[in-house]
Image (tube, rainbow over the protein chains, first blue to last red):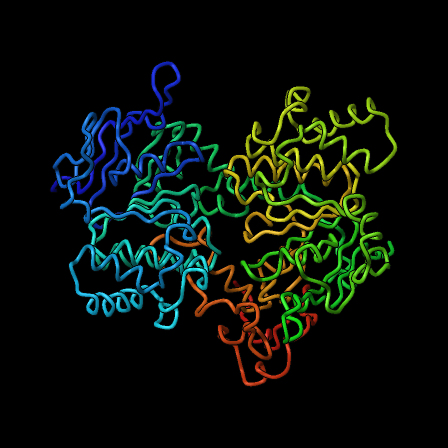
Length: 288
Length: 331
């Protein structure tokens, strides 16, 4: 087997200096191979977003390094970020689809701009390609002509993905891409990510606090807490038999029937809890 | 035992925003449900379905948002509040119907201490001396299980974590011992472990204080944790309402079924999730007849006629679907 496409090795990110220094990420290592979706789960402040920013070269590291196809692209003490001619390979989709698109550019032109920059297309070529690309992820022509504010959250997020796909990257880093959108749009986006993985052999790092989504989408998962990766492994194994107490707490916190699908132990806990709760007497007639 | 009469009945409620020249723009049309004592009703729907506007109508704050009740009734203990003025609402809002907003910095006043905000709420409810009010404020913080309540009393909202802030907002809503608590997406922005604590807290408080609850969320899984019945809204209308178990196990509206089918928590990895074709009907562009019709696998010609169908009994619940009898029973 060839080496990983993207690798983060012993990454530490420190904010501030001296006694006040805060380590947002500490000794985090992960790898990403072509055609796989890897999850990073954790709560707010766990360092997931900082780690993502390191991997795309938006954040300097205190120690550790990032390797892209075996070559170091991010290193400690280096002022240089990822070399310009390598940047197209790793693209990022941000959490908030409201702030990641230029409100004054129509959907198609936001995508066309990226195509012009990355693929050196002419204006006309880029325009045609933008419509085709948007079409392929479920944004039709009339929607593509709209401004971001006239699109729903899910549509906007798909436009952001189209923009990230413009340079035909090898890696997509998706930072909580589904947390700001409705459930049915979430399902559509999850299907899209799976399709991109299989059709384009794209490697996807899927960062989320939603264990149910991570379980559905990813083959391997890293659990982060306070800047450290506390547990890693195949998703099914980690979620079925969590070794770290924090992973177990995360699983037990899932609302509704989410946990039931993951572990039976958890299912029992829920049905017990549900029986304890008093249901008002169903009088059949007056209720509904 | 005699069936208890509901404390809140919302009948064919329509909410609109006045438009320049062209009359009213409907944003909720129609909401229809009732709430009995101790009942916990979940309201689920996607953005733009009218959930938040419904909450505002029940709190009498529509006017502040440039909207108003166009028709229908909001019967609180048999008294119609739909057309009530601010004077009436001031006696209801907070006192009879409490409100917990979405967790955010905006829910609390950033320049006032927790003490000030809680004692203000207590004074609004009843005559109390300063010491009495302070004692009660401490009790409220203990009720919502805030440790070191004495210290927290002196803090301002930016010094509190998201979970603590939400607890303080719940405490403030409980200060006047409301009969009905309305919570609008109270855990949406919180981490799962904090969400779990808040949901447990709401369950315990409901048990202890015997409140009725209206819990609004876009997440059915969260509603399953705290509610015993659920109302599904689509494009401003109530499309299905009934006991939680019945609605989740045997949905009687195609939209409810589609929502359940797109749930990732119940999906099998490796299989595509079911999605609803098309996009949600947006306000001002609702189709004729049933609003879900353009996206519905069961739609027939009669679905396009007239207005949104009203809720009609079906099984244990009520549904707005004209063809629910053709639905299989499993989600």
